[in-house]
Amino acid sequence: MLLFLNPSCNNSSTLTTEPFSPDFPNNIGNKWVYSFYDSLSNKSDYLTITIVGQTADKSAAIWQFKYPDRIDTQYVTVSGDTVRFSPYISSSWSSYNNKIPFPLKVGNNWKGDYGNDTNYVAEINSIIVPAGSFSNAYKIIEGWGGLNDYGLIITWFVPKVGIVSRYHKGWSFGMANETFTLVSYNIN
Image (cartoon, rainbow, N blue to C red; front, side, top):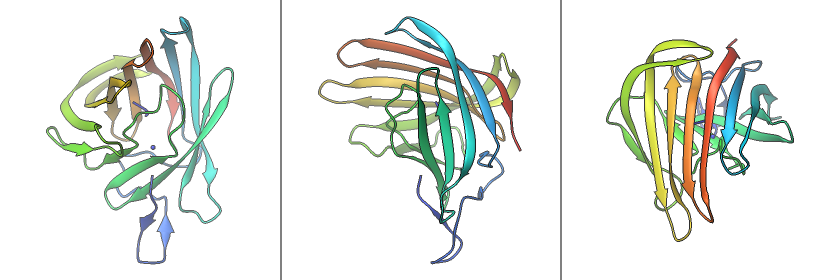
């Protein structure tokens, strides 16, 4: 899922990355380790995501995505009721939907930042991953379509933990299937 934002305003001039709700973990030091499988390369490995700091103006948390062969960075901000991941990174972890409005509720839907990107909360259910068993996981489904690029991302989000599973199926110049499964995490 994962699991990507505009600054949050306490007033017209004060910005913060403090979560507006304890459901979204956005604190420095938080860390998630995922096992992942990429069908295009037929490769399995690990992705470690760590919140490593804040921007100089403290308007965004800095999330580091460490793959075996590269490191990417995204900024995560909170604006009103919306968490936003920016910029889009070239990774199957990313989605066209780089925002999540809270609170999550079954039936909620929203438009992504791109033309044909739609998202909705399909259900709350239990999920078991190597990092644990969770009874309150929200299943978020994202779909998009364009001339040569269309697909589906299913994200399971657990309040106060984050994204515990993400499945990405995309068709572009080939079919891609990627899975991310939470192996361990440490939330401050």
